[in-house]
Amino acid sequence: MQNNDVLSAIEKVYAPTIIREATARLAQEVQKQYQGPLRLLCVLKSGIIFFADFMRELTVEVRCEYVGDTEVILSGDVLVIDAWIRDHAAHQALMCSIPSARSVALIGPADFYAFPRIQKVQARAPIRIDLAGGTLDMWPLHLFLTEPVTCNVAIGMYAETILSAELAAPSWTLNGEVFDKIPQDQGLITQALKYLAQRLDCTQLAIVLETKAESPIGAGLGGSSALAITLIAACDALVQKFQGGVLLSHAELVATVRDLETRVIAVPAGEQDYWSACKGGGSELVWCPGGVQHRALPHHIIQGFLDRSRLYYSGVSRNSGINNWLLFQDCINQKNDVRACLQQISDNTHTLIQCLLQEDWWGVLAAIRQEMKLRCMLASTMTTPELDAAFMRAESLLPGVAVKICGAGGGGCFFLFHPEMKDLDLKLRQLPLGSVSDGLRVC
Image (cartoon, rainbow, N blue to C red; front, side, top):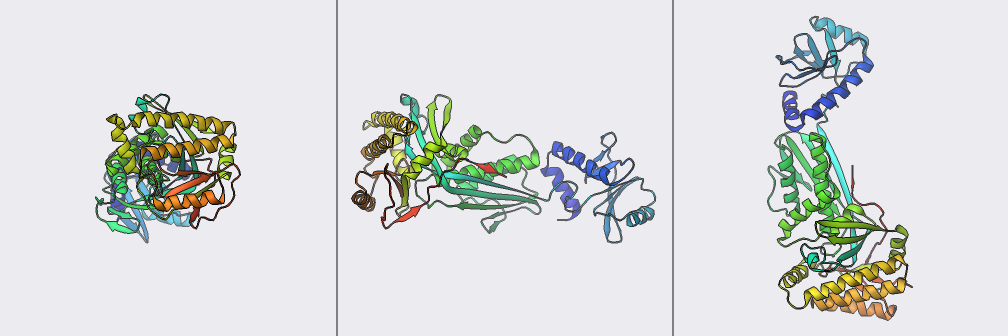
């Protein structure tokens, strides 16, 4: 992209307020290096000039010429040099070669008129294990229940998005594959990039997106939801770099991601995974008309719980959303006593939370066992013969151990809990259960 093309792209992509702020910063840097009043700070292709002394705009003719190997932009009595010239003799020689210039501002090509050619953001968020109260996070199911609540814990496995935009010919690079327009078959990534393009003029940008996920696919750990949070958070942060403004709040981010993921899976999406990704730590989510109340559980409580737990992957990817959708329909249609069972799940979740806060680990054990029992009553496909065999082996190695399949509808992972937990060889892949005090991070 030629210099004039870059200047044109700057005007299209960056908000006027960002241009003014960057110009003011540039003025301060230039004035640190040179004595006397400097009039010119920045010249754009449109001819808008920002002056240091009184910050007014003039429309002028702008043309490019070369002095040796240095490109200059000339506009009457104003000169901009696209190079750092620190040597005073070189500076004077250049001034003598164009005697009509009265003011000089030196702009480094790395800053490119105070606007980076490449903006880059990185977003990272943890996945979670759901202890109890899943399915209740799906609107409007919780409105049919009394004091509905969900409890989950973020763990030390992450989803990550790295997103960059360069002032260049438009293109879209997704995990190493290059496209000339947004691909329509990338599911959540497609929805995220469409969201970005609605908020930012991408016709002057080369977009590069890289995603990473540590959770196995179909594990029931909320990995896709955590990734969705990082995708939209990264898009939001990139827009802010070009357009300014305020980043989305957690509530706004959750609402946006919920709607976009619902488009992808074509059934209603619950919210508990998003909140865990945003907040980290242990979460008590109280579902209320008009929104949710998030309450953080004490860190030492969560650490005590995780110390007494083990997480395993069965090796089989499962879609827990299918069972959730069937439960959703039965609840709406008031069939199969689903509402009554969901109320029992909510009541048991309150019990679980109280036992956690009191560090009553045997009470926690009983509540997790009850959660699993109620889940199996709701969906006969909650478990599989392979999972049942693993559960029997766990019981033989540690009698009375509680088993909980991850994901409200049954995913490919499960965790074990026991107040006197020990390492168990289940002949399955064991996943890390490190505690996470922080949630979403964007830099």
